[in-house]
Image 1 (spheres, rainbow, N blue to C red):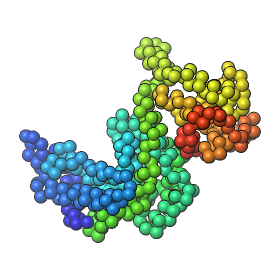
Image 2 (image 1 turned 45 degrees about the horizontal axis):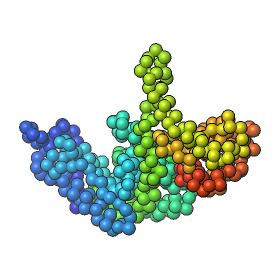
Image 3 (image 1 turned 135 degrees about the horizontal axis):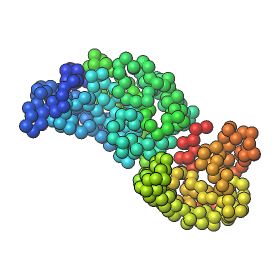
Image 4 (image 1 turned 90 degrees about the horizontal axis):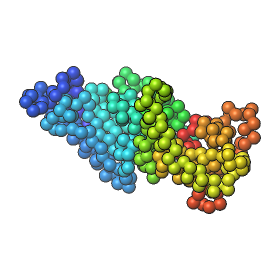
Length: 395
């Protein structure tokens, strides 16, 4: 890096007070030469990342720089570190995730791929809540650990050498050799199963301050896009994701009310409003499915109307998710097992898959059955919804 000699500022001003770059009525503590050193590093980041995007013009990418002022630094403070990231078009809806990123700090330089940012890195509870809705959608779009795409990427990363697999960015130099995961497949397995909605998943290369001078930053960004560009584009929000997130706020309060206190009128009112929101469109939704499936459970063929229920493939998050293609008509007990992911549907074959937890139950005989679908093509379960559901299940 041409600006390698400027990295001294990170250590020099590591413990600088707030507004060390100055503000109206307050003189800057950081001298102009040091402010220019920060700017030199940041400018090289912008040039290198922008050049790499130009080299990969076939991919729909955009540059997301850190909010930074040459005069005032970051939000009137001296910057703790500097970063830029590259995202795929549409990723703004996912909080600009996933991303190819690079960070310059007192630790040196890191560059790589972040599937998402762990919620522990956020202080704003609203951002944490947003993250919990977004992360499962991102993880579902990542390749399966044993897929050809994952195996091919793993081989390329092994050939490159130097990649560390972890849950988060900003590892300390002493942590470099101790990534949480030993391989890409292990990391993907974690994200697909126990990763949940807390965020995380990072593949990065690290350079100490002493090594930065030998780094070709443009080439590093270029390599990162060669390796992870397909992951960026694969995880872009789909129309389904957009609809889910757009309606999430309508039932947010109703999904996290906790215990009901009968002595609190306000709690009671919230419960009632939540129930109204959850019922919104429900009767129409069930009627549509009853008609589409001829009044029979798609799994068992049961035709007793009183026990048939409208099951959502993807969770109810507002009226738009009450679309018949996001539903399937199921007998009450099958609906419960479906919601608990003890019974699932293979999106490719439409075969019933029964959890090992039901191996010795009467439901074991359902394994391998083909789900009945409506004759009318436009009323059949959404392939995209089934795929999202399938990828989110820990099997």
